[in-house]
Image (cartoon, rainbow, N blue to C red):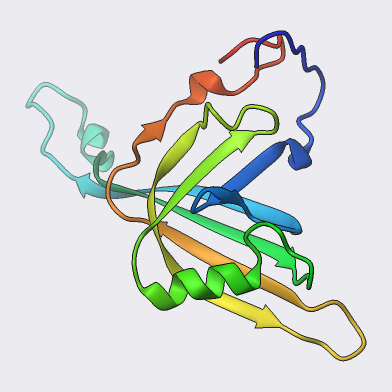
Length: 158
């Protein structure tokens, strides 16, 4: 974010989620999880190695995935992607475009790609705010996964 210096702790309200070109509306939280599936390999060490060397296993990455979960308040006047818009996207049964970015820099996401709506839930307690939650899972490799666009403590990219 050129010209902006940020210091201290990152305010979670500055980290935004966009689905199908619109921010997730009245969002209270979102969580992005980067998953790695690994495979262990146990190999016999060379003859000159100490016996305890064989106790250690190697690991290799066999797949990667990204899941995003978000929660928000159901709002009758929603102008962004709230429960109603997400339900319509879910009904289509197709991948949606997703982007994660810092507030004020939606043109430079740190994560962008196709995701499927894996689950959508609405909770409507008596005499309390109705809420919704959505879980998104990547559909293939992300188009963008770039930590360098995130602001670090000097106000520059990582």
